[in-house]
Length: 432
Image (cartoon, rainbow, N blue to C red):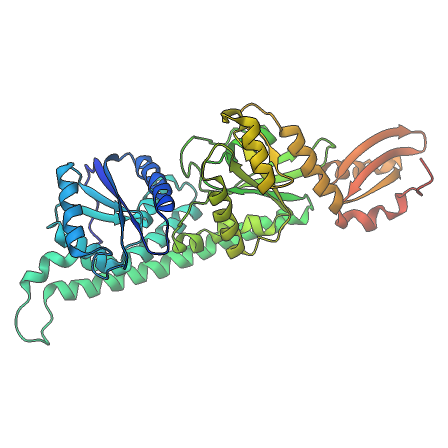
């Protein structure tokens, strides 16, 4: 089967183009272009040239005027670039028009395709691989015609006669649609399996929280620090795509399951938001969220808004959330920056997942949220029912434990599931 035109195997230099549309500001375009540079560099492609272009009215053919389009193609050639990457989303027709203008000597892609390539490189689990494959197939389907532009010259005969290229195009589209249906079925099966695992986990009422935030904000590093784990945590975009859950003992001994989720990015393609909703459902079903932000980023407020919008799409924006500013060890004007952020984000917590600074404060905040949801009582459990004591250690929070002649005295937070079973052992408030 012929697919869309594959990227040249030796793509080495890219020209990045950011177009400022009437509703945008040049500052936003510059910021997004900086982010695009990081995305493209993540793929191992060098940056040969960058351009910002303002347009008063978007043009259907090239997004910019034909004269400006020809100028940009010539600039790419002068800087020995073999690919032009637009930060703005291009329609399939616009991509074809740009590549025809470049006479087939330049590949033209947009931000969506770059992110799809990164996700494709990073996907590890079966679910992530299928999600990326589905997103790529849906992205490629309307672009199949690009692979058959070289057959246009073969057309001939009457208006009703179909040429070989058109027939092959229809065959390819049918094959891609069939593959999309197959991947959706496989993905549904994988998701159902994960939902079964989640239900089993939820039968043991251990509270859960999900770490969310912009990509490269330090979510995996924070998970490692809180749970003493060694999850992959690298200083690059989308270092991890798959949700990872680990148990974190809070200071009181109350267990908590923490899940790291895929990072967000501005202008994340909607097909990827849809594809990864299953992964991000961990944020929806958790007791609360930890929203991690990079305190050292000049775009931290925009990053916070991006995460908020994605959470709103998932229906998780109303969940109780702890705002955590990470990487405070890298701040240049630390006091001033933290003071400014506190004004915009009251009740936020400032930490360094690298040095451990502020982690104790974060743990206390997490514990206070769980304590508010779990009833705290005093219990006197007979020695012969030590199985209940052990279960409380696993599923609840034991704040105090004391062996007495008549039994085991506990001050504990009881999960809802265990309240009926422990009612007989609850001590009156005046006792103990």
